[in-house]
Image (spheres, rainbow, N blue to C red):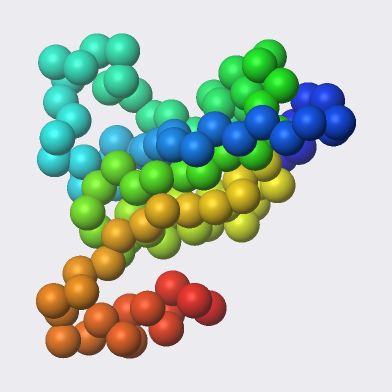
Length: 105
């Protein structure tokens, strides 16, 4: 997806989240959080950042799982307005190097 903001200046949203509730790894999220308790993806964010002339964004993980990191990396690869991803990895896991190598691919 492309942004439509002015190209003269770069405005970066340095912390935002995407989530898909059916993935099941957002233990903190429940239906009590009515405004948040729905999927939130790039098609939800794009009109908001275009309205404010935000040109780039950094996705931050919303769950402490490798699956979440893979999920947001995939979103980042599909959207030109994503300039970075803050993911999660378990550095105490004996397979940490293998997991990092997989994420680098």
